[in-house]
Length: 261
Image 1 (tube, helix red, strand yellow):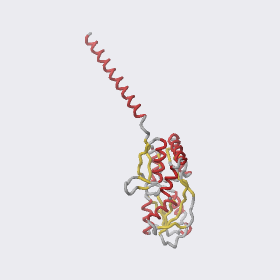
Image 2 (cartoon, rainbow, N blue to C red):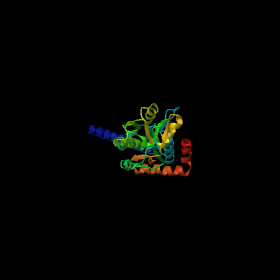
Image 3 (cartoon, rainbow, N blue to C red):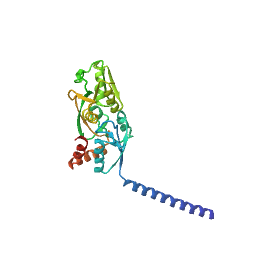
């Protein structure tokens, strides 16, 4: 009998501790629910002035960084920035390894089939750049089957360069992981032309005057947007609402002036 009473008392004590533990776990969950949401946002930082690395801090910087940080501040969430190759961005988003792409990405029809884009925030165009003083190439029509054209992987410039190669209009479409290497090869004559976005090409020209130049007319129009995983309407709404808010309060214009004027 005494043994039965002892077992009963031990069971009561064990149950008491179990309920207490559950209560503490619930309390912990309530506490973490008040913490700000953190989204992982990735970019490939060789696309100035949109995406680059600050020379002093060695941190990710650029128009996209400031713009997304302002949206996050407006909407009350935090960001974890990740440096990633451009060609891996969409796959990482689809796999759930990141939450947002902020990397000067053209919101093209083909990409919209894979991801959802925010309201676009910048209108751009493709251009052809050559080494300063190149008199043989005055426009895209001057490219010939013995020439090499370069572009950054995963971009509309790469698509056009590949198209020109497939059509036999150039001898090689050289596709680079980083745009900085492509510009370097253009300067040293490894490639004859570079097909790239207008504002980014202008930024490289401003950084190193007298090295490369734009020839001919702009080739097409494209608009940049922030990308989220397809169906993530909650995050997309936050980004779009924040975007509109910082446009309305003048923050967008301040950031634009900082990077483009």
